[in-house]
Amino acid sequence: MVIPGYDPDDLDEALESRLSTDELEEYLTDSELERYRAGDENLVDLLDEDEIKRTLDRGTDSPDTSG
Image (cartoon, rainbow, N blue to C red; front, side, top):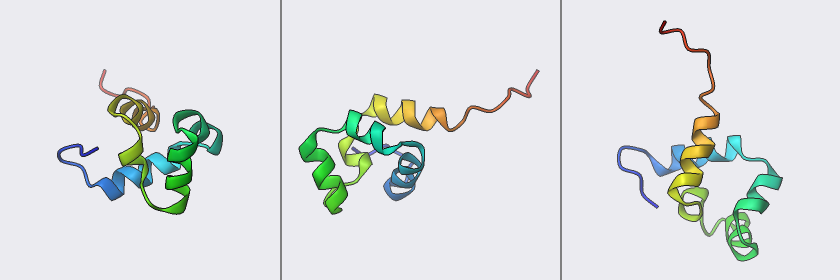
């Protein structure tokens, strides 16, 4: 899946850093997990848009300093 304005390689690295092995096994089917581990596809290709957004948003949990 392509997300305009983002480098797929950067997104994939960010997703990998935020997902544990257990989460990967939860999100991906057995065949998707096999293709991912073989390097045939990356997480950006395999996860849907909502899963990507949720995963990336977890990494931005920082205190709100605007107010």
